[in-house]
Length: 232
Ligand code: SF4
Image 1 (cartoon, helix red, strand yellow):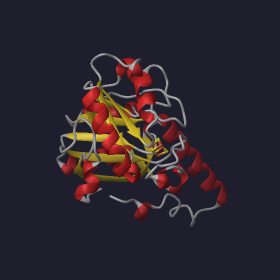
Image 2 (spheres, rainbow, N blue to C red; image 1 turned 90 degrees about the vertical axis):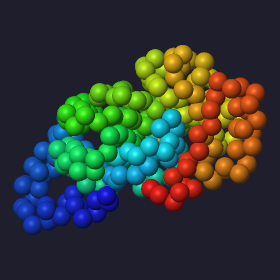
Image 3 (cartoon, rainbow, N blue to C red; image 1 turned 90 degrees about the horizontal axis):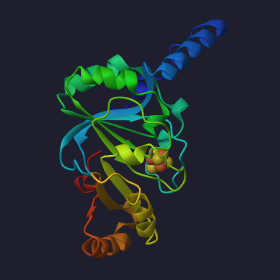
Image 4 (cartoon, rainbow, N blue to C red; image 1 turned 180 degrees about the vertical axis):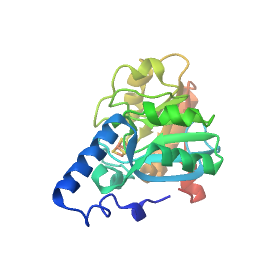
């Protein structure tokens, strides 16, 4: 669900400046505590990529990212101030209404926020909680599945190597295959290893990845199947 209808500032325009400033402070405090979060969009769909590809999942796309990947396909998520702040109770209400058994918290970079309150509330719904992250910020929250997708533009924190369930490396250049191995060398032995062609480079990179996986079968291929299915 797109959230334009809940413009963060629309209710402020009718209020005196001092009240507006106070409202803004309270909103920022709620975000700092993780009891309300900037939300770009949320929707029930099919997970298109990674280890759970093909399974129904409710996506919660938090706004805000300071990683800056040149090929990012959700650049509109970067500036959190462009998106409404939504109470975590409302996010959970939407998840419950969907009937989904899996919630994917993504972004943006979702670990810019304290996810403990949101994930604690989601747990009461009995859903599995997955996260997709560059791990450039500390892990937080009760997470059943950590999809770690390292980015060259901001280094991951070391803690993620022991905890990740899935290492998903986006391959933009042929040299990224070698870079992927530097992360695989540090990851825990139970972690799945996935190579995924960057969408705009797929025609060039996929043949390389196919050959690479045949020669290095510890890796699997991940494709962005939601883009083939033309779903979000
Ligand atoms: S980490 Fe994700 S949201 Fe942030 S710039 Fe990179 S691809 Fe985009």
